[in-house]
Image (cartoon, rainbow, N blue to C red; front, side):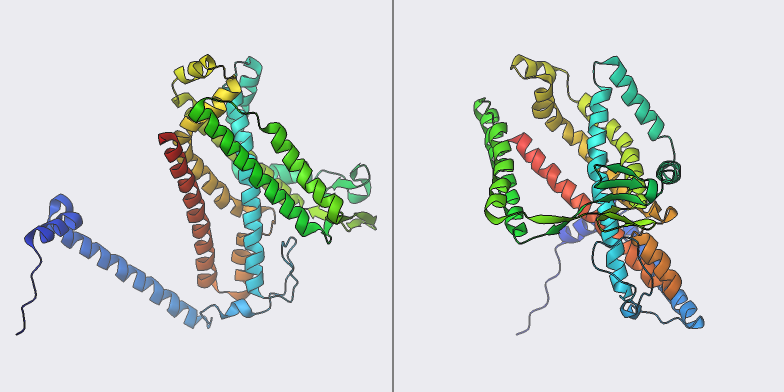
Length: 401
């Protein structure tokens, strides 16, 4: 005997109505349905309009162009690349260049920002005024202006390769960039890297043990001699047993330029310096505000326990201030990554320059290229936010414990 389908309970229907419509009830549900329908219709019209325009211009849609030969050179490539490679290879070259300048910029900006913030809070009058002047000057100048300043007014005025500034005849600085010896991996390179990884892991474990003893039992454990011995001793032992991990390809001046060695492009240097110093000014204010949000009694409590000012900041104040610092700090990391697209102004081959610029102009696949570029920047932002959120979760757990 067939049974009739059970009707949803009235409470479930009421809860669904409140969730979708809020205080407006069913009227709110109808408004949201109409809004979603309008968004879907607008999206459909945009797609159809783009498809019609592409057909009118006889431009094939799709991502098949990625397998075509690019036919142009890229001044900096972290992976092997030549003009005969495909546009897909160009995409990865630009992506790696974007990630490189973003990661290096984030690290440098964080270090500068923290130091400037501590300088602004320093009781030293001169140091506090210099730090405050840095913040007010740098953050009130447009970023594009600063990029052009470092590229045109500083690096472009360096001498030519023949008159380059030399350091011990191995490092050369000119308007072509910074030329340094290029390390070439040898047979013992893998063991050397493994020794460094083991030393870092052991050092982190010792630091974790020392912090646990400090917070749990109030015992201060000195670990820096053991950490230093570990970081120096293990790699040195690997070198003694397995030989030098790498040999150096020395740069040599041939004609009007250098041959050999590794080159740091002036475009990369200008972009990294500008992004780092500009973002550091905002990070400094974020860190300063976070530290000042912690009650002053925490500093006095640390002093009463015999901790120095630096130890109190590192062990007591900053862990509490990180709750205030992390959200706006994440925004600054995201801004630095997105601002790296200004590299197109000085010709640094990042993702936006070589893919959304040169590749788009050659292929005309605007929709696909812009969609890919947008997706990449969105993915980078989401990954950065996830990492910072995870760090914040771990920090809250440790503080709660």
